[in-house]
Image 1 (cartoon, protein in one colour):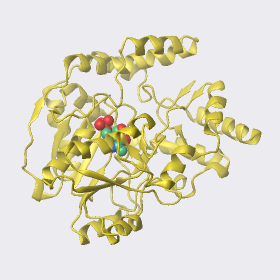
Image 2 (cartoon, helix red, strand yellow; image 1 turned 90 degrees about the horizontal axis):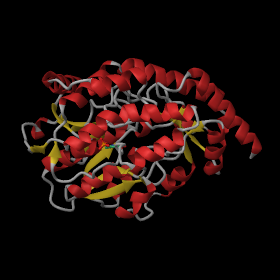
Image 3 (cartoon, rainbow, N blue to C red; image 1 turned 90 degrees about the vertical axis):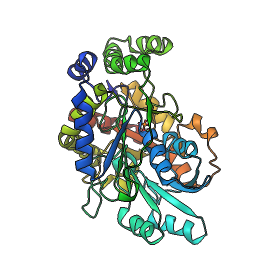
Image 4 (cartoon, rainbow, N blue to C red; image 1 turned 180 degrees about the horizontal axis):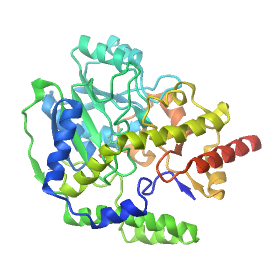
Length: 398
Ligand SMILES: Cc1ncc(COP(=O)(O)O)c(C=O)c1O
């Protein structure tokens, strides 16, 4: 039984530890210090990564409606903070065979007169963007560069620099199913000295009820996965959902109130950073199995070959008739229905909340064809082989 998400990063040991562990004061102090050293800037810890984006944009103090360029293949959690900061998103379509926009796409917009004040790059699924050329364009045009590492903490750019060591600001997310998974959490690291020592108050702690939900999330999702083994998983999942017991990744939308990150979350974000190298090695191994075993016809040339540099948060493939493959895999006890991203600004049911208007045809096509294979600790090398064989068998039926 394999799942793409649903508490994918927890096993029995970690879910039990997370249920009973106490947050200690020094956990937050440690996390802040580690991030400040790693990313060479001033760190603020927040309850969500999306709040870190809003905070960075507010520090810029741009006139209302100023333009922030984002990847045209992204998450609502990147778009919404821009609106929250009173700014406007400009969507940059992905490059051919890539999950990120190219430097050329950014240049094209500038040449067309779009007055971009800040750029957010996001190294989608851990696959790195063309940072060198993007950063050069930003420098030449006085544009602020924000590196969003929600998917890519620990990734290496193709020029050998680590992700998070280039931009003016670094954003991190420690949300469920991310590389560093503390159920929730985020951080802003201000690298550009001009914007250091600015303060925006963290007005509140996350609600107690939400904190309790987050604490139980690893345990509940572990129980659901176990129940699937005895045929009860669907039922348990439905009940937990109905009772509102599971923390949702989209959660409460980022409102103007900045929330602090309590010690409990910091403790597990710290664990995630400590284990990062092992985590990434493992994901690389699993991705290599997919790469070597899957029919090359469904691989994404420019991406699947970059697994050495990527965090490999997921292993993306592209297929026609994705729904058929999802249902075929489900019959083989492989559950991969949650798709990052099923729309240019995902999830699809949030797209109508944005001002997206077909600016990114390549991302639209990609979002119809992409399917992500799991690389987390709960998928073994044997299972990755099995998944590859099942997909190849399905392809033969097409
Ligand atoms: C690329 C990217 N950036 C930022 C975020 C925001 O993270 P959080 O859920 O911690 O607000 C997400 C979350 O889904 C994301 O995918």
